[in-house]
Image (cartoon, rainbow, N blue to C red; front, side, top):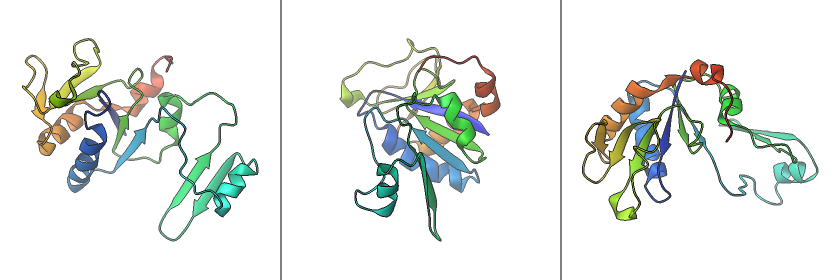
Length: 175
């Protein structure tokens, strides 16, 4: 199992790229999972539904299952937010995990940069960025592809992803 991150300013198109990238990687025969960090309070459950009522009643975990999928929700109930290092082992084994968020602790990242966003590149200030997907001029000295070159982005992801075991073996970092 390998892992790589997508990093970039809000509005750069990370989620849009991810939604196009996953089908490409799956078509190449890879099993792919994703981790998305949310910086705000979020809820996947619908108020009033049984699973929501279970959580509101105080359940630490609620597992919802049907013939098509299952989802496990875990309430932290005041405990610290989990780190990327703590979350990775919770995933079922796959070939590749793509992380959106966890900028400080993802071991390698591809920067997603949209010129119209008016923001500067995170590279070269972030030494963990190994490539750039952009709609602007391609960066010299760092592998770069156009945002619409999904096969090129997929090749970069395959080339630079690192084994999850390497991430788990590293010393814990804040964030």
